[in-house]
Every structure is written in C-alpha cells, then in structure tokens.
Length: 216
Image 1 (tube, rainbow, N blue to C red):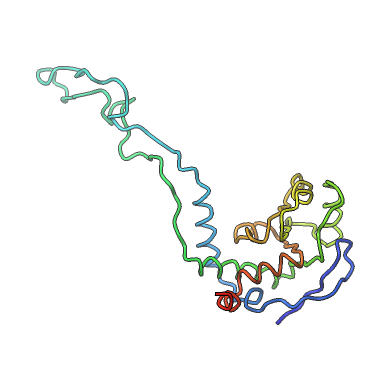
Image 2 (cartoon, rainbow, N blue to C red):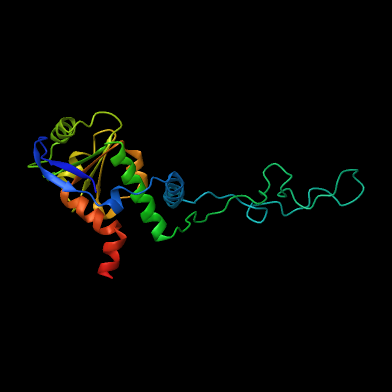
C-alpha cells in the first residue's frame, strides 16, 4: 500500500495518507479507457442530425413528363432521390447515441486511470482547498506552488465550493470536479490530479469494491 504526503495549499507538509491499493494500485488497462471514453463521448452527442426523405421534401406532386413517348426514362416525381433537390436515401435521423457499459467496468476504468496518474507521480493531495474569496490569481498561484505547470490539472473537491469552482473557471487547462462526479475522461484530459484529502477518501469509498460489499 503506497502512501503520499499531504500538503497545504502553500505546499507545506501536513501529514501523510495511505492510498487504497484496490483503487490507486490497480492494473492499468488502456482498453478500459477506450470503452469508457467512447461511452462518455457518445453520451455528449446531441443526435440532432437530420435529413428529409422523399416524403418529407415539399413539392413534386406533378409527374415531370408523360410516361411514354418522350424517349426519356419514366419519372414519377422530381423529389425522388436521383433528382437534385430530392429526398435523401437512408439519411441520418435524430436519435440517441448513448450505449451502456456495466458499472463494474466503468469503476474498473476509473481505478485504472487513477492508478496511471499515481504511477506517473501526477497525483497531489492537499489538506484542503478553501479560498477566502473569489480569486483566479490565488488558484493559479496555488497550482504553481504545487508544481502543476504543464498539461493542466484537475482539482477534485469533496463538496460544492462556488469560490473554487468559479475562481478556476478562467484558467486554461484547469478543471474542477466534485468527487462524486470524477470520471475517466476528465482524469485523462488533465496531466495532473490535485485532490483534497476528503475528496480522496470519498473516491476510495466509491471505488473500493471490498468497502462497497461491506456497506451492502
């Protein structure tokens, strides 16, 4: 079981914390990343793309020319697919792109992503991330002091905090998410993870299968 230093927002050591091996030392499986990110991206698709078939295109009620005697191929309507301005054959219609993935697979993918960040040394645990006031400059200074410089960072908090969420909003490459909403896509999109102690404990409680079985 690995342990990490817990630091303050001023990067001073405030203790250590033992990481759950089941959550932060899981096997890294890229195929799980692919499956879960694909599911998340599909869920974000609006699915509003649409075309009209020959029944949906207005006009075309009159036969363009008589059936026989013109030397041309017979035509029933100018809204047939072979005509310019006609309907589309098998075109896209509004639909949902959502597809399901077993919850155990989704949790395994998140454990794998968190373990990847631990292996890279990209996880920092802070004692707390409370701000006295709304200040984007203060958040930038905290992250710089923690060594977060390139690739962006995802700040994980345990409870709603309007000051932190609003203050980090304008920083490029910086995201804020609550522990209950932590997901694979956001973890992989940011090179660093900055988690509060309370958020880390909430994530472990959510992802440790043994603890889940005990609660059940």
